[in-house]
Length: 101
Image (cartoon, rainbow, N blue to C red; front, top):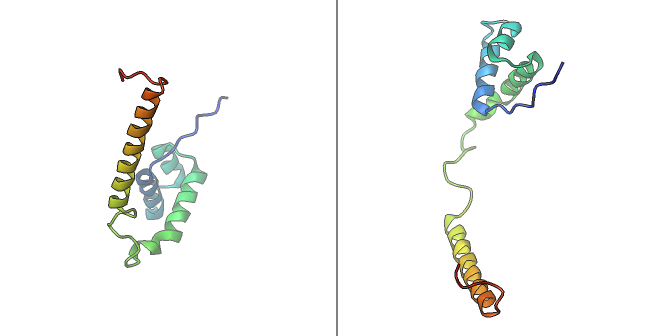
């Protein structure tokens, strides 16, 4: 009997399976057959959902703003572009890089 390769499930799929398990409309065996996931995995996802459900309703926990400063990233891109151009010119003058690039 060969083992199936490891699969990575999306968070949407995990939540779908966990919600189906929480609803209790189908048995664990039925969910296993329906979603082709091991019963222990379904139980684990269900437990995670129930333990972390309260975090959904916390106010201010998730903000829609990006966590990094875009201006800083653009400045870094510009700085790195200048360095690349400078190094390309220096290597070309030294004969270590062809000018046809």
